Image (cartoon, rainbow over all chains, first blue to last red; front, side):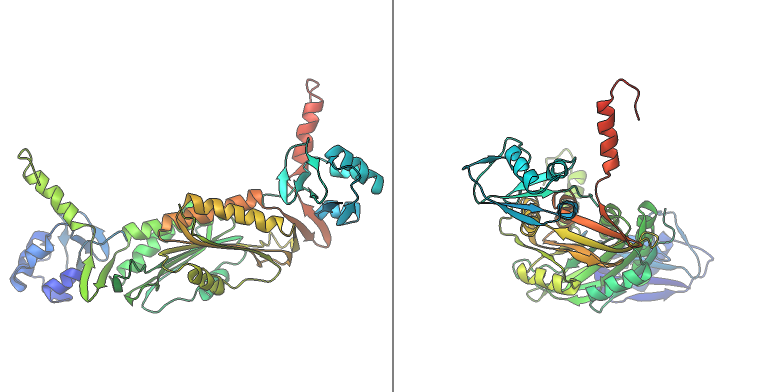
Length: 84
Length: 84
Length: 161
Length: 161
């Protein structure tokens, strides 16, 4: 399983806060995850790849697109914030 | 009259906190004041001209030795302090 | 430099009492000569903001805050740090954030507090939903600026927006 | 820049309550987004200081403190400043000084508070009498250094202390 979380504007746009995704392969790329999420929630891909959205895996920011997700990972999509 | 004030270590060394000095002339130089104080309190001049002692007239620091005091002025001798 | 600094971070909906925070800081590390506190408040900009709702990523926000405090305690000789960030719905004048730092020396306390607050602003994620006269708006770093820039790139050489 | 900053200075023997000081600051100038507080405490250096007695020049110290706060309020857009310095006899851990500053912006609040505290240290006169195991000592800026320098000047060219 993979835990996926959405916050703030994304949570509202996608209509959910979290979602557990069964992992069939031992690994998943971010691209594969986006496809799976778009199948689950139509239009999710466009929302999740909009400018400014950042990814965190296991509660740490990830800048690397070549990232590979493993079972038990928690991946979060974080909309931009103001510096306040 | 001239109000003269001593603080901290000087107050202890001279055995008094303040003193009112009659002013006969309309003006008094600092040098004349020191003579008058030394006559009043033996040894005062050495204490009051020790390194680090600063003068304040009417509660403002005075750097100018050519200062002239007038009736009603309050002059204070301030021992050095630490920056803490 | 001071691996022994006592660090405490919290994200909470409840308000915080300043007197209590200073007392905890002193109990955590007695003997300080200097304390610096920063308090952030909800500003009422010409009465336009009725309320502000802050959302965070529980776990990740505390972890980021702690990482910031640890870096500060390595860089300056801090004795203790207490940081509290509020989430939930807040009104104008409400306290949002507290950064409280103690040290033997005042320059370290000032530098540590300012560094922590600056790093919180740039590294710790809190989303803000403003209620402006009934209209709820997620506050994001000027997306219009970002779009304007993208538009320029896409149309470069064509005389642009 | 902000001739309208509300400034309050006090020299007192009584302790100050931090919660009260923040409340007064907010009442003096509502609408701030940032507050910075500096608290100075009597340090207990290896238990050698039993007590510290602070003396000031009533009138002159308040006047110097106010002048410092006015300069800070001209230089940064401060909304309010509350400064309290204690005099009299204090023990280890006791609060000596509070500088509390509010502004719309955090960098102004930090800069203002730090400037005021630095200027207090160099411009406002407080004499300190330390009680070290029963021996009372006036704390002065290392007079030995000054004497050493004077000695060098007097004996220059003779190979010195």
